[in-house]
View 1 (tube, rainbow, N blue to C red):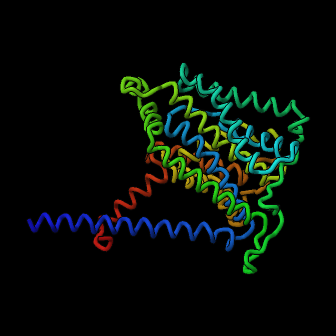
View 2 (cartoon, rainbow, N blue to C red):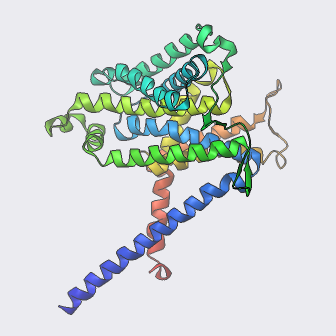
View 3 (cartoon, helix red, strand yellow):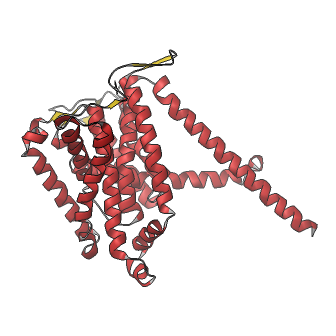
Length: 363
């Protein structure tokens, strides 16, 4: 009787400690998120904003590919649809962000609903080819529609005004700190990313989320178990496209100027690298992978003073550039992840945490 009571007390104590550790970890992450734009240099501030934007867009691919197992190489197409929808509504129609931001996601979701039925008959490489075709069609459309997109020359994007304040104007917060445009975009993107991340995590636990996981593992077994395959595959593309369109609207607003060429296959591959390196099926892994892929060029750039053969700009004589080395490194990271740790950086973190808990001082 006493041993049973002691065992129950021990379990409750360990559960309380794990809960306290989780809360402490969340507080540390929140503190880092607030301090990032306030203490780091402007270059790192810009990198941080692009990392948040990449995480938003890759969150959609996390749902389509990581959860539902539908291979997509055309996710950048949904991002570009969000960009130009926001431009049309925000610039041409002069509408508020209350309209162009959600509308960008909804229009991209409609296109995702059109692509979704292809996933019913195709899978693997064949489905990937269809998504690449969508990417080619959208790039061609943006290039030959200069009235709306500016064609190959690109065009300016919509202003982002919240309660009459343009985010590209400096603002003083309670007279204590003055925030520049990049810092303001950081906090706006941080709020949006938090909302969509919580939504994605909760969506995994719902009936549709469990249906996506079963379709990813084995669609035939999922159908036998009563999962509506048609609805699951189409909804995965719709939700993933919505996330991509939402991120695209914010990408355009932050850049102030966009060209069709930036939404090509390279961008789609970057999103795939993010979810693979971070860890397939993990919301936290998407965020970690986005920062890894986005910040890596800055870390490589810091080596230019130490490595004379490393250049920041391409040369007609060839040689190694920062972008080339960064691309090689995160390509190498994908290979290492696939061979050594399929769960990515989050899998490595789980291993480290499990090992740490076995040591006496962690008890």
